[in-house]
Length: 153
Image (tube, rainbow, N blue to C red; front, top):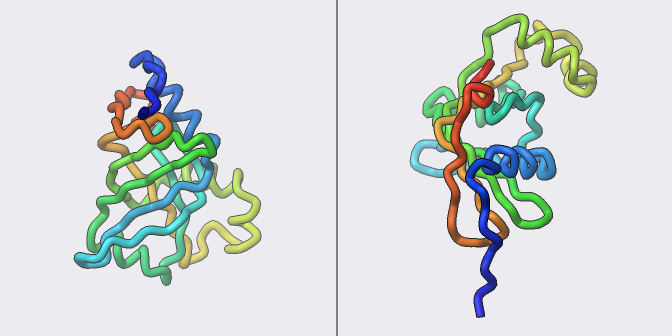
């Protein structure tokens, strides 16, 4: 007999989704390389609601992929097999105050890149269009409402 997941209160979906994101920490980022999907783990440098910031280097192949097609999906999977999928658009972060704040908060990025004006550094802001939550292989996604908080910069 197939196990039945516990019912979910729809008002708790944003909280449950953010909990998965916090617990999983390292989402998989899907991009397109022409007509070939590419998937890789990433380490977000900031998360504001469902807006996720990812640092990269200009020489990395994902930079070329995102220039050609900025549509992406992030997938978080926690140890309990709950998952969150964020479908969105990656855009290069140009806001210098936000970049400085991210830089100040990320010691590893500072050690690796030396200075904020390193020409190799790109920070992508992944703006969510759709967020879905699935409880432990329930085979049914729940649409997570995007609130003002999730869309804030």
